[in-house]
Length: 109
Ligand SMILES: [Zn+2]
Image (tube, rainbow, N blue to C red):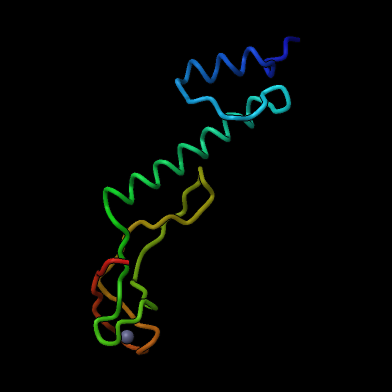
């Protein structure tokens, strides 16, 4: 059986996916560790870019300004990911500081 975890294969995968080489020794790590590192770098860069496109905001209670607020929503079970995923959000909002129904205001975080 031919091992695909050799140094040459790792270099091929990195080059063929046009990913920037990671500063780590491929001799001491597996291909999957190298790709996981590349994926993490990509995820961090994507998060930075998303903040530039849409700066973070927060939703606050219109009465007291607290961000201890929630909205009614539906969650659907996602079989593939084995998680409840947000499917729909509704207008009803509740402030856990005022302990009453409220309206939300969006402001820069
Ligand atoms: Zn409030």
